[in-house]
Length: 286
Image 1: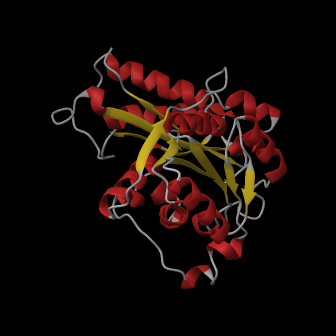
Image 2: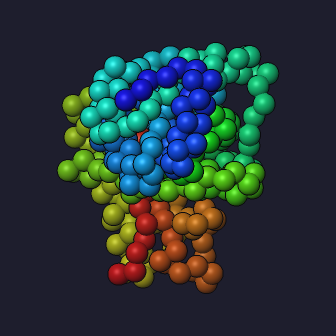
């Protein structure tokens, strides 16, 4: 596995693969890898003979009071995991390689509407940081296909919208959430949980499951279902951010008259100690 730090080196290697007629699949990450990330790389290897992953902790997607400074940087261990799974190239640029000027002077890419709800409402500017860095990475790597996890379903939809609107020739592949044995969605921020918090954390997924079951049984008072779920999370020790039932494909609020239950997905975000956990679950027909 090659580890490259500059855009020029990256482009030279990708150009060589292109001359050989090889497709390229790409997995962007912020590092501190877990088995969910590794599953993305495995899926990328199914998509193309050449695979690239990036590790870059992107300051543009962190708010002023968020955990950018303390976000775990574990490049050496991450590299070992990626090499073991057969990655071809790891792109690990320094900050100045991605943002050669102060962030406030850099061009930004924004996807309206989708970026302003759910996590976007709680973290203003977050998704502008995501779409800006992903568009830059797409220009740098120029992959045929890029792989993203479905744990951040909203992000996946935003990236797909950006690619469609800007005519970026990259196929976007989503990979289902990888969970711990007790149902907790794998996340780099799970490491922030204390032992006591870790025992509570699976109740977020359990609350999603319970709400799905009630929808499958015919309940359609979405506001009541959402409020009761938030109350349940608070009683378990969470600080709920949001718990919302939305359209799976457009994130719009549904009505019983306009949307089949099979087109719905439930989204949740809640604080547990210093960890902000997110999860989502599709509502399938019973």
